[in-house]
Image 1 (tube, rainbow over the protein chains, first blue to last red):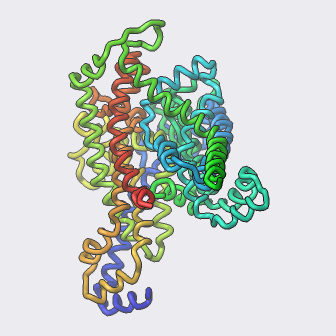
Image 2: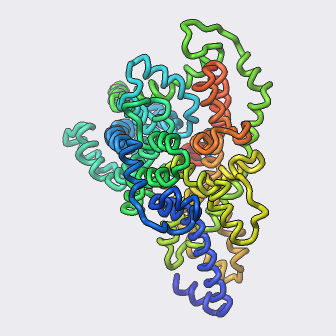
Length: 286
Length: 299
């Protein structure tokens, strides 16, 4: 089929070649435009401030220096927020996925009245504007004496991860053949064992996509950290904002900080691009 | 007898289901749903967030909002954001998807265009703040280089350009998202259909508008719903790049609410604004679910 289309195309001859060339030229130009801001961040983080002021943001550094990274990591204490974010992100990712898996199992594999309505209710939170819950959450965590603790952000991330995790897992669980379940049930296998021994191991693609999706989302989060942390539990993106406030015109330190803050997700993206995209797709079009 | 046993089985199944649902449902109710109701409750009070007492003020907060020029200004900015976002990154995402679909080198192009999606709003905001700097910023230097120096300006300090400058940064980040969805949509278009169209002598343009685009209707509805929802709740980029300034020129509902709640301590009023935002969003959420789950509901 593919080859027949190519054959039809070939008849059009030089017009086809011209089309191809202009297509690649346009895509190439667009890619350059898309990469320029990243390039700017990269080169700026290796420059001195004097170099930036003299030569602007575009050029390569006259002298390459790692000083901005040290400044961001040590002096601006981005290192601590880096560790904080891992402490917050890891239990949040695991917690949100596992807790949602329980509910998703019930919604996908146990027949009961109102399960679809409950499903819609649970995933509606996906689209809530965070502003509508900001102040109550802030107050509650203050009352619970959890303000500025890791736990406050972990609970928040888990609660707000339930919608996306339930959506993806419930839909995936439904694709697993039911015969398997019936056979296991007849053998006296409990639902919990069924979930842990059969359903979850068969859901590795969904779990992988979800892990990457959640990790990216939580790592990049800014608003919860802004509202729920102060000193001890500042996550990295809030740390970057503090860095910006401290080093107003030291763009090199700012750039180094943003680069460091982006590295974990960039690495995850480059290593698991397929799962990254799959997570996006499963989360938006079921 | 059988009926009674079936009913007992039903009840047991329901109990099992709710045992599984207990933890997620509890967390969701306690930390997602309950706060919404709490904000709703605050929106009828004049609470300042600190004092022990507050008064019930009825709909006064909502009246104040609808009479405040800066509320309409923020709403207008959200509307501009939404329209530009539907027109620009969405269409560009569709065009890009069509361009790279089944093209040699597809994966490289995709990786480059997706890359900005991996960045946090904070990172995007900072990078683009440098690009828009008046003296040494990349954009003004580029304009100089290509001889358009006359267009140079302080992009984020000029009330006429600030909103569009921020939207530009957001578009850079999110074009890839529309592209992901449209690429998946294009994969769903059967090759036989395209082949038949070519055999019938349809040119590329006709093929796209008459055949492919109608088949992408659901994808388009999904992309637009998500775009509208995300445009309504924008906060991070605005807060990071300008905090709504200069002189509210880039204020959106998200930043306005945050400032009322955490800077001005007008909790009652800020909550009322957040409820208005929530109701707008709810309309789109309902539309979105009806689109996405249409088939399932029919079963």
